Length: 217
Length: 217
DNA sequence: ATTTGTGAAAATCTTCACAGCC
DNA sequence: GGCTGTGAAGATTTTCACAAAT
Image 1 (tube, chains in turn orange, purple, cyan, brown):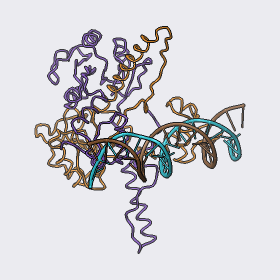
Image 2 (cartoon, protein in one colour):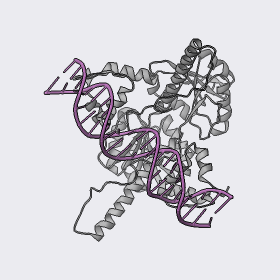
Image 3 (tube, helix red, strand yellow):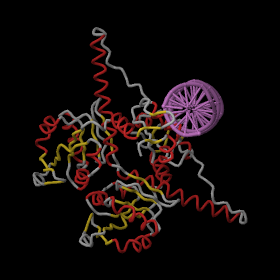
Image 4 (cartoon, chains in turn purple, green, blue, cyan):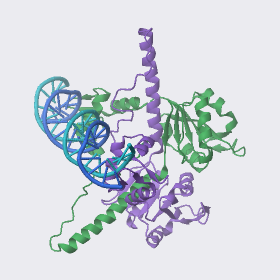
């Protein structure tokens, strides 16, 4: 498929085609009128804009189940991420191969980071040591941190932190699940009251299908 | 701290206090004028609204590193999620203890789901089998699926799927990281041109600090 | 005196609709 | 004829600002 129209892409993504075109227009004018978007060129331009064409060396600190899962995760390499090092505080882990990479002891953290020019660190340690790991990463020059530990990290200005809470997606599903149950009950009640009518396509009102996001990043 | 004002909460969360009050008002009138919100009561009301006060039995299918990491994740229990079963297709895994729960073979998947009244399933299998696992879960009565496998799942109407891509958060960090570098370069250029002025507090224009989200759920 | 809850205003985002180009 | 790029219209979200409550 050499080219694609905004209509096709929008249908695939489930959005309005005008919105998609307007969004694309902020990146530049990469389409051809009467033809559509050249797929390869478009992918390249979006990748470039998102920073996926660069090589991003990352370190993962804390090689438990989650750290190992991330190290093995296939999606990283294809997006320009390169696991520069796996680091763990347990001397027994040092030297073990995980995802084809030897785990290194955390004593060498600072040197590993400067030697590899690492600016992104991933923390998959237990929560009790996450802050001190974070402090060392920042002191060593890391300016972006992806935190899987269930702790809020404090960092100086200019350092980005994103916290991943693996239970949040489950909470969103549970929220919808609850709504499904509630709506069913409401429909049943309504059906009991107005027996003969029968109308089962009522859609949700309420703000939107999504969870009201009071809490930000 | 028995009560909290919208101003305090908003400052902590980094949002406007009027927005926070308006958001809360959709859940009901849980504050007291001149006083604020009773913390315990507010937490309970929000938890209830989000479905966190219910007991949600979940099954995790695919007990590799990621499945094991999730099974061990402390955040689940406190949010009402109960790991009802760990399921794996590998006979060698059956009977092994992970997070204090014995792994069961996938032959019994249907029975496990109906016996435990499970409506939420988590898929942490390799992508090649994710769709067939998904089909079996849905046929057995699961209506919400959390998918960690890098595949798009197709499901019948009425079933919710959320896909977690562990590299997306890294991509967002890389995006900001790239912007930091770009801005620095732009500032340096500007500084070189207009040497004596010196103004370093210029903030980002552009839509917002976040990534433009063209692709939806 | 203080803080909520909320109409109304302002800002932002999304969709429409069509001129312009292939 | 077909499809992009985009002003203008429409819809939604956010903020302001203040009456009502304790």
